[in-house]
Length: 146
Image 1 (tube, rainbow, N blue to C red):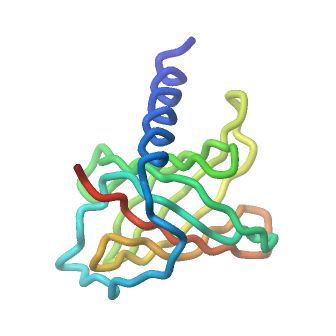
Image 2: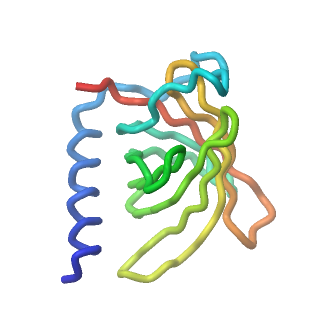
Image 3: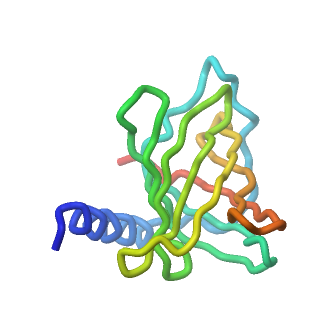
């Protein structure tokens, strides 16, 4: 088993265990759009819910960790039985992400997402699958930090 695959497996296990501890229900974004000069820390775990481009509701978890450069992030979603990974960067008060779904070590789909960051550290925005015309939406609510 490759080192990268083992790392992914451990991260998924962590995200699932943290999600099981969360009592955050589906809800609405409560924070105001954050000022680019006063962005909250995005590193942590989140509960996500959304509507995919086909109109199907979904839920899951998201883990965000710091990227290699300031203002960049690594994202891992566990959503409806799939593992999605992405790289994001902050521009203003938005998190711009390129993501991909991985199954059995193969990339099955790719896309982009644009989230607005709120004063409460929530994320809301649109997700698009490359090659599809429709756009989905997603909200992410941070779990309390220990």
